Every structure is written in C-alpha cells, then in structure tokens.
View 1 (cartoon, one colour):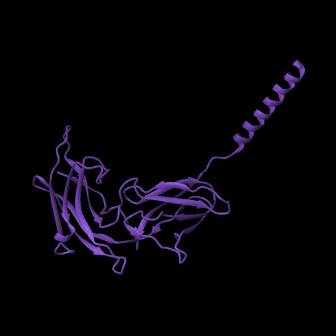
View 2 (cartoon, one colour):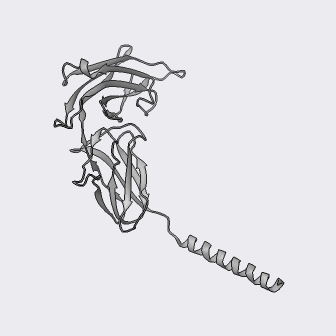
View 3 (tube, rainbow, N blue to C red):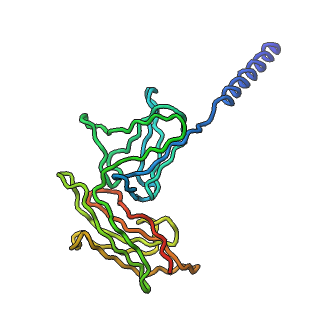
Length: 234
C-alpha cells in the first residue's frame, strides 16, 4: 500500500506540473480595441462609467461577452485577442438610439481584429449641445450654448432639464460636482441661445480653476448627454 501511495503522489505531481506548463503557455491578451461614441464625426459625452457596452467574439457557442463602460468623453478601450467580434450596447442605455433588428433584437457592429484597432461607435442622440462656451464671469461660472434636436420622428423625446455642472476635478457629472444650476426644459424659449450661470464653488484647498460642462437630461431616458469638458481658469 505504501508503494502504491508513493506512485499516486508522483502521478499527481506530474499532472500538476503538466497543468502549470499548459497555463504558462497560454498567452495573455495583447490586442487593443478602442474608440469613441460619435454622431457624424462629433464625439458624444456621457457620464463616466454609466453607459455599458458588450463585445462578443463570434464562432464560440455560448461565449460570455466582454463588458465595459464608456468614460465621460465617450471613449472605450478593451484588451483582448485577435478574432472576429460583434459590438453592441444593451437596450435602454445611453442618451441616444441604437439600431434595432427587424426581429426586435439589438443590432451589432462587426469588427475583425488583427492587431490594435480604433473603431468609433456611431449612434443617433436625441439632442446635441452646440457652440458651448464656458467662462469665468465675476464670481460666477457662466455657460452659453445651443441645442439641436436630432430625433424628430415619433420616437422623439422632450428635454427635462439642462444643467451646468462645475467641479474641482476632471470628473464632472450629476454624481461628481461642487456646483450645479438647472433650467427646466419647458422654460427654454430659444434653443439656439441658452445661458446658465452658477457661483464659483469654494474648496478647502484654494485653486484658481475649475472644470465644467453642460448636460441635457431627456424625459424618460436614464443617461444625460454632455458638452465637452472645459477647464476654466480665473
């Protein structure tokens, strides 16, 4: 029995060594897929880490998707393997429309990866912020901008509020801000000329600049769309 047990230990060690050797031979992912949310070449700003995406590798039955989220500038980045993929955004996500298939499923973007690649993701937003300018004005941070309504068919939605968010760091959103001012959508009288102003926030450590951007909250849509981030010095 002692001899047999000795052989079992040797066999187990050999199998363990073989498994480790196989794992050591598996190469880690080394291909980067990246890009940005776009509408006709213009970047789409969203809230950081709130709008998800899914990336499926084709040719593998029942494979789980690679999941991630866009940053506040609409950028995404995935480290993976070469191969054929399908990119999609889950239903009800983002301040925009995503193409639907006639069957009712979500459309996908086909991506053939063979080395690092940049693939921008084209979407159709409900609204776009145009000609935004954010500056320091006396003791306030002031923004002027216009709004373009992109979707005008039966699926169009109303504006709930427009907001100016100001923060001490580059993360600026409803969840990350030091100052905010809102305007109800029903109070907008001229979509091409909107002004918002909020008092400069104070911080425990004094700094002579803030970061700011304008956002639109759309009725019945969870995610806001934003103007580009601006550093305002004073």
